Length: 147
Image (tube, rainbow, N blue to C red; front, side, top):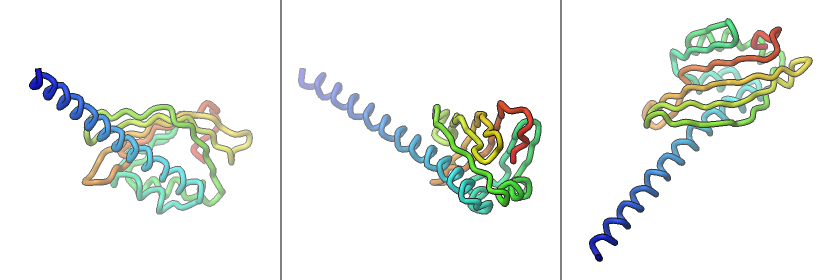
């Protein structure tokens, strides 16, 4: 009986440890995406693209950019014009220990009228850090081109 109690205690402890590790990773993933929006909203292009993987794929509607330099070139005019985006977190899914997906609704409050859409962030873990490997943005307003 004591052995059964010990085994059940060990299983529960391992389960709690795994849940805590996932929660810590989800927190790290969400923090990384929060950092991206914070850099965007303060107009910090370099800080913004530093959160992306070196060869990230960046798709906004039909526009696709690849790599940090291309993303920075594309977004620089928008940042200079005071682009601001508010977001609402919907879900974070850890697909593996090194891959995650984050879904957020967003409102570009700097657009007139404000534009609503959704963003899907695919993140990869490199060492101890999470980087956005792909970003897909779909705007509900058809005339928004990313600025």
